[in-house]
Length: 411
Image 1 (cartoon, rainbow, N blue to C red):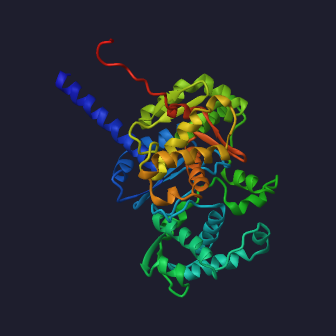
Image 2: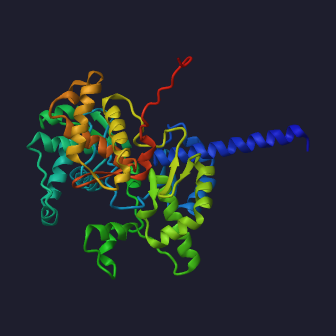
C-alpha cells in the first residue's frame, strides 16, 4: 500500500471520528434533535456506532425517526434541582419552578387525550380540571385561570412545548392571553413528537402493579426509571460504570463525597479508563482532582450555563465566585449577610458598568441569589439554608493579589 493511500486512510478515519464526536455532542446538548439540525445527518450516518457506544457506556437509548432523533436521557440523580428548564432566552423567561413542572405534566396529560389542534384556553381548562382532583389538591397545587400569574405559568409551559416542537402556533399571541384570557391562541399538536417526550423504563400506569408499592414521589420516579440488573459481579460492575459515565457526561463536576461506597471504589479504580472513553467519544477533557472529576469542554458549547458570562449578571456571578473561592478553606457556608455586604462593595466599585436594576438599594439579595443558583448549577457551590457553601472546583476562580514589579534600575 502506498504512502498516499495510508495518508488518505488516516484522513478518512479522522473525519469519521470527528463526525461521530459532533453527532454525539449534538445529542448530548439537544436530546430531541430535529431533521433540520445540521448534526441530524451525522446522527443518521453513524446511528449504528452511536447506539453501540451508548448501549455499552450508558443506560440511554437512541431512537431515530424520519423527522427527529431522540436520545432517551434519564437523569442520574432525581433530586438535582439546580438546572431548571427555561421556556426562552428573554429576561422575562424565568426558570421553571416545581409548580410549573407539575403544570407541565397536567398539560401533557391533556394533550395526550386531545385532538390534532387545541387552544391555549382549552389546555388551561384541561389542566385546571385535573388539578381539581383530590389527590392533586392534597399536594397543595392550586391552579386557576383567573389571575395573570396562573396564565403566565401556563404560557411558560406552552412556550417550552413550542420550543420542543410539540406545539406549533397557528394564530394568536401568548402575551395577549396573559393580559386577557379571551385572547386565545390556536396550536397544531405534533403527536409524533409528543409520544417521544416521555423517557421511562416502565409506564407510570404500571407503578401500582409492583409487588412493593411506590408510596412516595421519589419511589414512583425510581420505579419508572429503574431497570433490571442481573445479580452477577459483571452486571453490577457494568451498571456502576454506566451510571458513573452518565454523571460525568451530565454533571459539570462529580465529587467523590457525593457517591456511595461502591460507586466511589469503582470510580477510583477505573477512572482513567472511563474518562478516556468519554474523551475519545466527545472531546471532553478530564480534570481529575483529589475531590473529584470534571469533564471540561474546550469548545464551551455543551454547557447550559457558562463561566465567565457577559452582562451584569455574569459579572456579579464571577465576583461571587471569587468571593466564595477565597473562603473555600473555611469549609463552611458563607452567610447571606456576608454576601450582601460584599455585594454593596461591588456596587460601589463596579456599579457604573452595571444596569440600573442591579444598583437599586434592595437589589443585593435577589442578584446574589441568582448568581448563587448559577454557581450551584455548575457544581461550584451548594445553596444551604444559612448561606452558600463553596465547593472545591470553585478554586479556579480565586483571584490572587496583584504583584507589582519595578521597571528600570534601582536607585
